[in-house]
Length: 400
Image 1: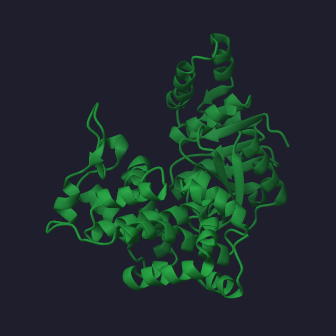
Image 2: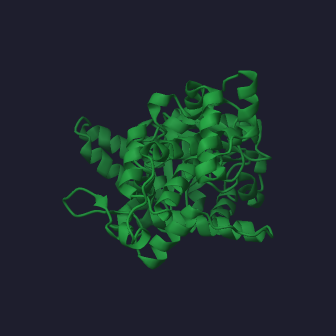
Image 3: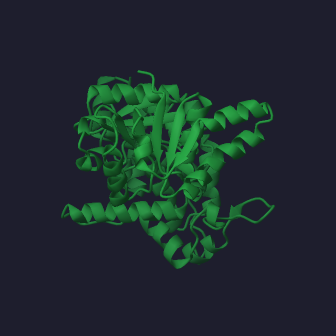
């Protein structure tokens, strides 16, 4: 199925990036926001990208920009074969735009939600066509990142999955398909290394060493820089939503180290991330970013804790690998190959390892289990080897 026209709900950074990616592939993208001015600001992303591309002629720029049409009216989406909702990670906002869009779309149109963590089955509850409702998790910046994580809800139909898969490929992306669960595959896995980074900060370990350990592993950035890029504010808002979801189910919310650290950074210190000019790093104008000196003042006032550098490196890697195995054990992901692709293309897992599952294979499963148990003894339950890992190690199998 080749989609010629699709709508994008939300002209923020994500929606703007998706629109530009579509136009580059010759697809008409109707960029909808609350008012025309907001939609035009989203289109500015493509205008600026085109202006920087010296290889494009003026005619080519005009043709590409002509494929991005801005609107503030849902009626302008009526002819779309698909829409991608790319608004804030707030259930009520997503529910509202889904209802409005479905009211004007054809009965067989694909409705996709771009979310990094909210369960698709629950978001689909407001849909009048849940068989056509699916998750398409783009990564920022959407026009540059090569991966799209496609998430099937409990009622997602085969036709919707096929349409989403084809659309991702039309956009020049590599799709992986996973099943529904909080955080899906990529967000939950990268969340483990972010959580380890936060835990180490709260343990009094030097953040410079934490970031250096990630780079020594082969990661493009450390866990603290990664959250600064996403923004503490976004992570903070996501955490509040997750807490509300847990409490709405009648369960007790248990704050994790990453949530506690982000809360303090936002509420106590007003350090909301790179785009706000202050996060775990300082961002001096015209200068190189550097770790905020307040990290030592507030989290290690008596001096940094000494731990083996190899432990810091392994905590960042093993946390992701072990949770990837848990995700497979739970049926969130069924293919080691897709887990490897998703971890490298989506969340910056060290590429020389071959991905999260291949990393375990390369260690050798018995040796990986032994090291995991050492880390669990020293640093907690996140490193306890899952049942699936132990079974494969006992049978002499690898992840395939």
